[in-house]
Amino acid sequence: MSRRLAAAALAALAAGAGLAHANGRFPSSVSVSFRPANQTDIYLGVTFGLLVSHDDGGSFYWVCEQNIGYEGTFDPKYRIGENGDIYATTFEGLRVSRDGGCSFATATEEQSPTSPGYLAGIWVDAIDTGPDGSVWVATAEAGRPNDIYRSTDQARTFTPLGLSSSTVWWKSIGVAPDNAQRAYVTGYQVTQTGPDGGAIPPTVHLYRTDDAGANWTMLGISAFLLGTSPLILVEEVAPDDPQLVFVRSVRAVPPAGDKLYRSTDGGDTFAEVLTTSDTIRNVIMRADGSVLVATQMGGIHRSTDRGQTFAKISDLPQAACMGDRGDALFACGANWEPDMFAIGRSADGTSWSRVFRYVQMKGPLSCPVGTMQRDLCEARLWPAVAEQFGIQQEPEGDVAEPREPGGCCDAQAAPLTPAVGGLLIALGLLVRRRKRA
Image 1 (cartoon, rainbow, N blue to C red):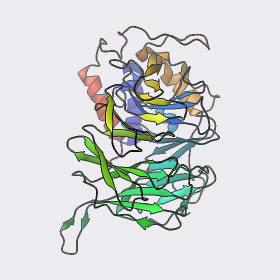
Image 2: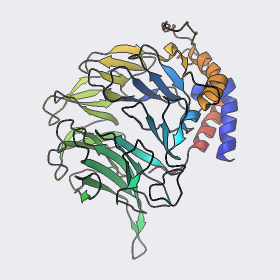
Image 3: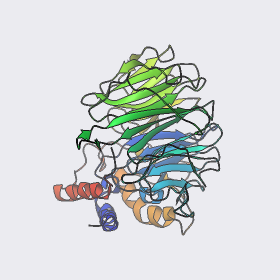
Image 4: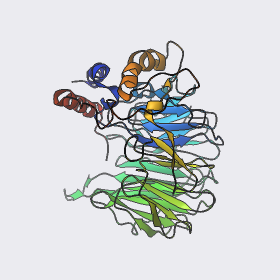
């Protein structure tokens, strides 16, 4: 079955079986993003699209996956430009919305495919933005050379930065918040065949640039304990010191635990500072120098000495994501038990209050006729979403209170039949492209 036919079948089933289950996953929040120098906009990545609020979480509006440019069991990485542009990584390139989420276009698709900065149709796996508004992306496409790219015109054009490799998939980027010239990147090098015909196992790479990608310094990886499938990711660069960087070794502690490493000399040396039993979702360094590490099932850890030592401070929320807007912390939580919020707010990471639950969605993002958001997300898909979450539409300005459990997505709901549920999961997996490390 082709991806297009699979997507069509998936959409048809969604109309009758509940859209939020269409990719085979339970509805949950997975990321939170903010607009620079703005304390009202919140962008909540969920397993069924993107939720956008422009009133500090008072009302959220839904953008469907198809409009953003992906389907299946995949979660884009988002960044928001200072002007409100939305950037989303996908298997088909970097998707960009310049109208607040009504429409998305693939960056560079209007350019010649032979252009050095052409990214359309290529898996963009990592993204970050610099304090100067620059957009950095990394590609991880199988069967072609991959590189790090930088844009200085809001992702209209990109320049490759000299790390082209046919064997490395670039997996993470961290740009220093106070130095647009400094960035760190990591890559996963796939298994290769040696001169004797034997297999050379996969490995990882870590680089630093001090001049916006004109030159790169390869950094040592000997300090890292690596997992069976080695992968390291840049998690955080200190907001006040480009020399202070945190890098995570993924699944270095089987079956799902990670190790966090800290460098104070720009990555020349690293020291292990935290071991977790669960996957690290985010590492946040705040303006006061405290560092927070979020995990979904292993609790929240905090450092008060700029990341040298950590102590667990809370078991809740089940933080599948965490972000610092400057004025407050926000974390993804379990929309049902035990957190009862899809996103919560905290001043210090210890005490959390509900900002929003899915039942409080105001509706789909309102857009003009002729946009995919209006013609597909709102006109065709939203009724199933509203029914699934038990959303009762209220007049604009009123936020509905969460209903008692018992809707189709609560624990007491009638489950999908095995036949329909199995088909939904199978179709969701079919749509997903097999390109991940």
